Length: 182
Image 1 (spheres, helix red, strand yellow):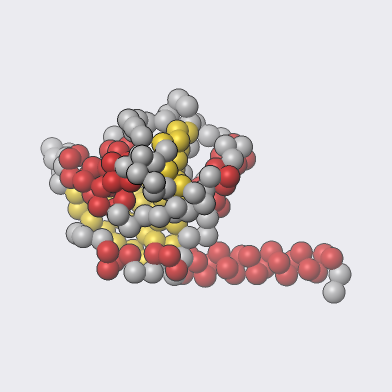
Image 2 (cartoon, helix red, strand yellow; image 1 turned 90 degrees about the horizontal axis):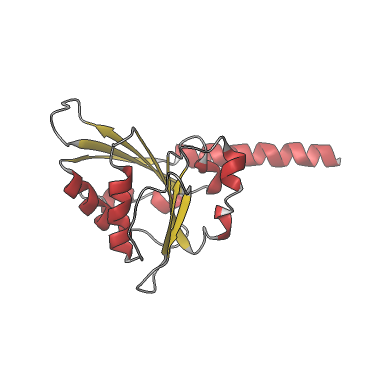
C-alpha cells in the first residue's frame, strides 16, 4: 500500500469516526424561566463537568450564553468575574478550589477555524473546562466528545423564558439525560 493510499484510508477512518460520534449524540431539552434560573442551571451543570470537557454554545445576542457561563464559573469555583470575552476573544479563569479552570472563548469575531486554532486552546483543553460561545461550525474540531448547547428565546417575547437544547456528542455524554434536571 502506497503512502497516498494510507492517507486516503486514514482520512476515511477519521470521517467514519466523526460520523459515529455524531450518531451517538444524546439530546435533552430544558426550559429555563428566568436569567437567574439560567445561572442556576449553569451551577448545576458545572457539577457534571470535568477537565477536558468542551461546551459549544449557540444562540442569538442576549440569549443567555454568558449568563449560563457565569453559573458554570460559580459552580466550578473559578476566579471571576465571568464577563463576555467579545473583545479579548478568550479569558482563562483558574480554579480557586483545586478543580479544573474555565477557559471562556467568544468566537463571534473569528473568521474561521484557523483563527480559533491560533488561540492554542488545545494546549489547555485537557486541564480545563472550555466554553466556546458562538462556536457552532468552528469549535467542533477541538474535541470528538463535547456538549453542544443551543439557547433560544421562547416564542413569547414578553417573558425571560429560554429553551436550551443540549446535545451530548460521544461516549462521555451517553448518559446526559440521566443527569439533567428539567
